[in-house]
Length: 196
Image 1: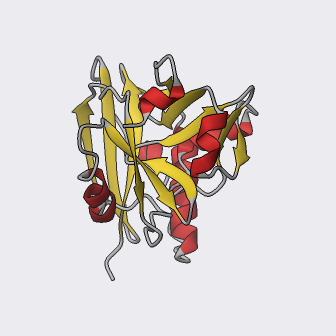
Image 2 (image 1 turned 45 degrees about the vertical axis):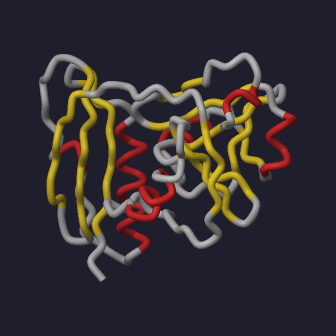
C-alpha cells in the first residue's frame, strides 16, 4: 500500500506558525511506520511571500514529495450537519481524503459536517472541534489529533472529554481548531442554530 501524507502549515509574510508541532506530527507518523530517516521540515520550507498562505507539504515514507504555497482565504463555517460513520479512520493526516469528502457531500445546505463515530463526536471535515460549558472541551477521540488541538491541550486552554451527540445541548459555544484558523468560535446566538 502506498502511503502519502499531508501537513498544512500557516505562513504569514514568510513566517511559519507553530512549526514544531508540525515537525512533531510528521516525526510521529514516520515513527509509526518504523521509518528512521526523519527530515527537518524547516530545511525544505522557504518563502518570503507577503500575505497569508497555506503551505501544503506532501510526503511519503521515503521523502518529501511536494510543497505548494496557496493563497489562503478563510471559508466561513456557521452551520454543521451531523453525519455518522462508525468505520472511518483518519488517524494520520492522509493525502487521500476520499472518505471524508464522501461525508462532506452529505452536508446539504450546511457549511460543513460534524462526524459522529460510534455515538461520539469527532471532527468536522477540516477541523477539530471544542465545546464550551464553562470550560472548553474537545473530543477525546478525534479522527485526527491536529496540531492546534495539541497546542491548546499543552497550554491547558482546552481539556479532553468524551462527547456524545446527546451532550451537545449542554454546551453554549462551539469553536473550530486547525492550523489556518487557530481557535475560531462559531458566531451564533444559540448553539441549536449551528446544526441544520
